[in-house]
Amino acid sequence: METMKDLFEVLPQVGRLEWIGLRPERMGELQSVTEATVIAERGLQGDHKSTGRPGTDRQVTLIQREHLGAVAGMLHRDRVGPEQVRRNLVVSGINLLALKGKPFRVGEVLLEFSGPCEPCARMESNLGPGGFNAMRGHGGITARVIEGGLIRIGDEVRFTPT
Image (tube, rainbow, N blue to C red; front, side):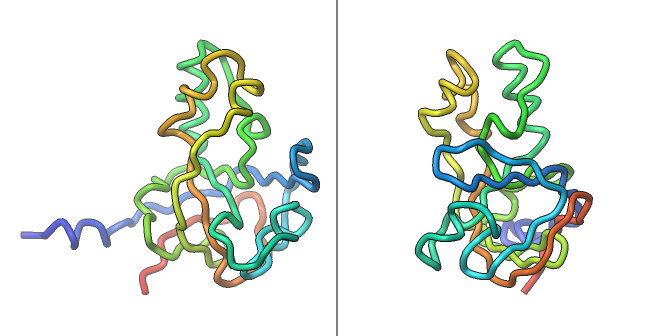
């Protein structure tokens, strides 16, 4: 019989990178790109977070595409776009919370889950009344960059056992 510890170490699903967004300036608009260079201990080149203090926990933010649909449903909308929720990466096909405390790859880049990405007050202005509460529990995760490299739309997202 498998223990809970054993179950936490099994994640055979392989996800897909669906969208990449860079925000050159704090509070600025996100720019959608098809590929990005990711710098170890910094984040995505061209994103304002990568120019800050190295080693922070919030170097890259990720959200599941499936959660964008859930948020749209709670807001009675047809769609919520990734640029509205202000995350760097949108992935599909893998439960990001299952990566808690684990290393994982997005293409050739090695990331490590560093925490949940809680919604901020901007969600209310970006998504309208109730946007903040719709995002609670659906905000995605933050990650640290362990090994940098290039990421592209369509790259695999997978758990990397140590």
